[in-house]
Length: 301
Image 1: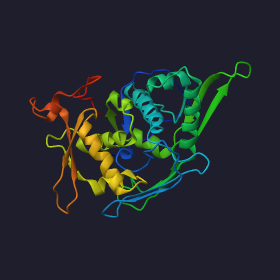
Image 2 (image 1 turned 60 degrees about the horizontal axis):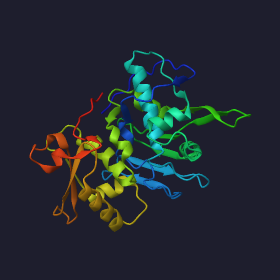
Image 3 (image 1 turned 180 degrees about the vertical axis):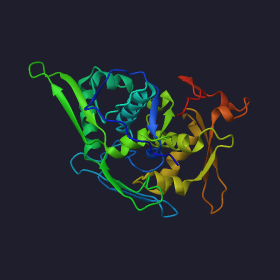
Image 4 (image 1 turned 180 degrees about the horizontal axis):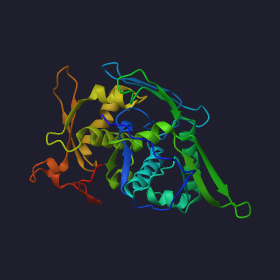
């Protein structure tokens, strides 16, 4: 289990300029149902309890803004990547507040940084992150400890009154996420192609595979009912099963190959998640080509 390290002194804020950093994701957010997987507005809460009853997550949406989505989480990944970069550069003062040009953030996430619509969508995402309430005992370390927070403590924007153009934005991360990024083993690297995945289920499956599959030679097996519960999906199980089957058939996830295992104990299918680089070179999935070589491993902390 990741160990928490001493939290460095926090300066008031950090101005983020770099847009081509290695991507880092907070590992505890990758397998639990913390985000909506749909672009449609979701107000129904997520309530998840692990099969052994030890871990639970509750996510409540704002009726006005809806629940934060897995696409909104890109902003948190960007922020985590900025913090990790500061740590790797030897900085001893790590902020919870980041200032940035929205153009740079949109460009880094592979979104159109020029259109007015992109800025409107960015503001909407920041609102959802700020108003989505999370309550969980993840990271309780064997004691009864509950954390309650929003994905962003706050966000601000400076707008030129004359031109109406944005002159910069500022976000403040919650303490739970901030400490999760800073603790030892608290982040995992993401393949850049993650941001090219358009489906919510695809994005979530990649994060689950990245969290569980790792570098294991044999990969990782997980049943569909367990995946369904972990997804927090508000759709029917049979629809979830149908969508996953299509994703497996396309086999387009970066780094990881998915295989559908039809016959398992209990009568429900399972998924086998394995890193493509661990497959035999003659396996068709080993030589998958899409945008860039998706077998390329990324260094982990």
